[in-house]
Length: 245
Ligand code: GRF
Image 1 (cartoon, rainbow, N blue to C red):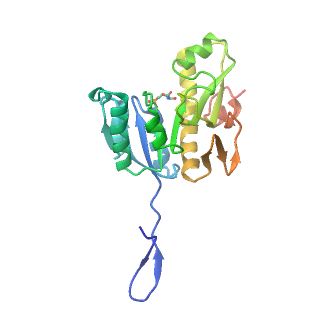
Image 2 (image 1 turned 90 degrees about the vertical axis):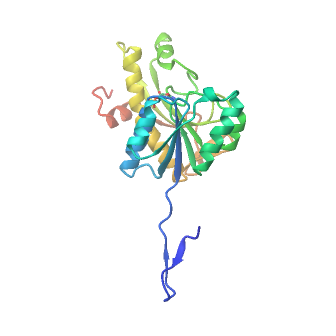
Image 3 (image 1 turned 180 degrees about the vertical axis):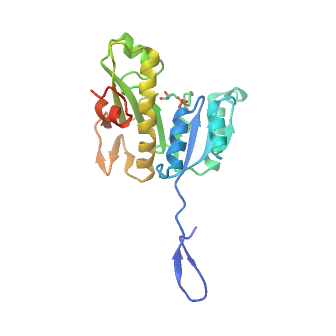
């Protein structure tokens, strides 16, 4: 599409407003991270538009969140496909129909095939409830507590073929308190997820955050393996938590 149009017969040209970058969000459940992205969009802070939400579970509450926000909500139940490859093939088709600049995984509980990852390589972000590379996989809060870890947190990372193993873009730390339980820790980590995911999405859509080879760059500078890191104190202050020590 041309970005300029002839506005009349006086040969004056006027720039058309650029289309906002397009985001497809993949979910499987509650969709609280999706909600954080929707909220950011409603405050004009996402840097783009969520054009569709796709869930592999038809009863995912996140689909209702999408519909309530006027966003196309697509249920694509994986049980209806005989193999992971067949499912991912169908998912690729649904996603490509929406011509996204970014695919944001937000609690999408599926292992992705290499074909899927390669198709969207460099345009796939995920949010994970740990300070990667620590605690890849499930039950991260319980594992951190069982290890007696002093700190925990959330990471936004680019998706590669290694599960939860792609390069990290942004992290937020939470100090583990002596009286933390799995439930309290999950709550603190989720607050940090909701804080950093919209920021990472905006930076990606603005072209500031990129995957270059195996590195994440921010404003063209390669980031360390932990990405950009929001300290416990800074995150707690942002979130108005009492204990900002
Ligand atoms: C989050 O903890 C996220 O880090 C993980 O899955 C959970 C999804 O939660 N990948 P929600 O559906 O966004 O509430």
